[in-house]
Image (cartoon, rainbow, N blue to C red; front, side, top):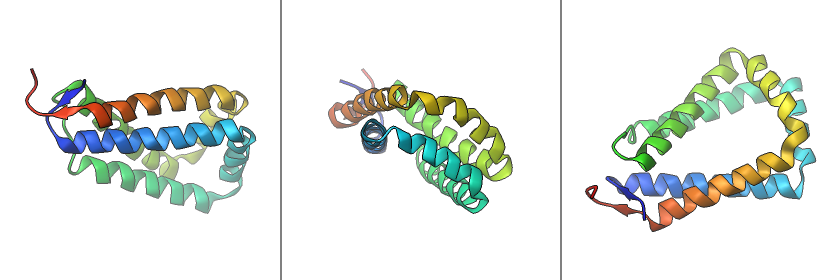
Length: 136
């Protein structure tokens, strides 16, 4: 069982886990979708900007109440939120940098789906079975 100091950490871990599980299932069901998404980003600067804005807002929205670095799960949640915000800023300022990094990953959509599912299950379990109290 994971121990953390805040209930918010557990709720965020659960939400992140559900997101990764849904992403993994979607990619396993239709791995060609990853190629289509990268191609869409290549063709649509407005979509890239909107995605960057959404990622930045999500990351900052998590970081405002949760910038906690007391235990492993809170560090993981905070780091993921920081990565969301940074990815959003990069998509807004230098989108080709991230799109270029995504292109080689397209051929390995099933692998990324499995990674997403495994990480999602781990985060979901941590969020659902963890306890928010003083560390032992």
